[in-house]
Length: 441
Image 1 (cartoon, one colour):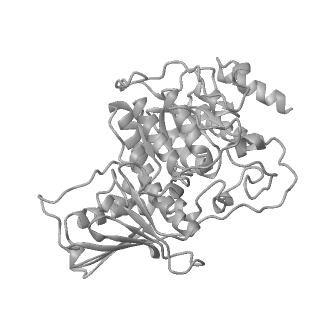
Image 2 (tube, one colour):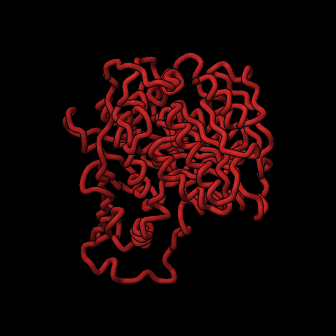
Image 3 (cartoon, one colour):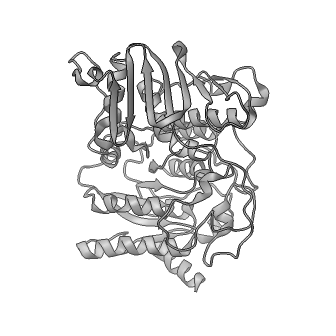
């Protein structure tokens, strides 16, 4: 039955030579020309063909907005788990059948196990990547090489080296890229307002920022369990070390929770990179550090501590991992605290006094998805462009390295290297499994 499903899905996807995609490490993509492949603008009346790489809880949260958007057409899904893949395919087909539309040129939503097959599909213009973190870099690099525009969930990468490779590839192929850090464009503009007031100097000189998010990841020690039927486990692991299946990593069937692979270093930097990629992103925005970042990191005083590491920015600003949820900024004139459902200041007068016409205003798109669509058409950069996401997650990675290695580190954000520290520069990436090396840019 599995072979029959795979064959049917493959045929619906069209023009992919199965034999050419047999080896896991293959990076050559025979994709047809995408809309705007040469970097030009898309016509306003052309629907953008979108494929989803990864079908899980986050995809099911995103899909409704994509399926309702008049400028988009979801034409394919991809996942290594048969149950989730077929379920996602069914959601798309059902929605378009109810609305009188069609999915792919073949008449329905195509479904794939291998993301490279999806990328080679005719009519595909852009992809949404919502796989586990350790797969993001591979799929972003392949998508950029295939001349597809990209929406990738945060945290963007598993390592700092992957962050630099993503920027290089997206720039080389002139792709439009949106990082899924919605706090810049949604949540009632609370984060934008906080950053505008901080940039306007309403706090005076910023002294510290405190970011309240969870802790780092640990090495995986889960026991072996019986394999989930229909799961391509080797491809789920991908570049990560080989290990037996456990449902904690890839839950059985269609589920409604965020899987706990985020707790393990082989696949994620923990909640520190997961929610940290949201809140440290706001700190970077407030400090005008989107094209730079920290200059160093200091571990906590006690090796057992799971909070308390500090990022060091220019002008002596310290950003501390720990505190109330969200981001809290303290300056010489007061404090601003912001999270998804609140913003406050001490004294209250800081936020009560309106900004002036001379004060800087930050971008205010209608929503994160619309910003991506608008930029696909205009070929401009999104509010959370690839470098924004790469540098925000790098701040989180630096904190993790401080916790894992228990020593201060000096960072040069201009060259993406540790200053005079050969050992630390060996921590920028990891050894991938044979056959799953990073693709070329």
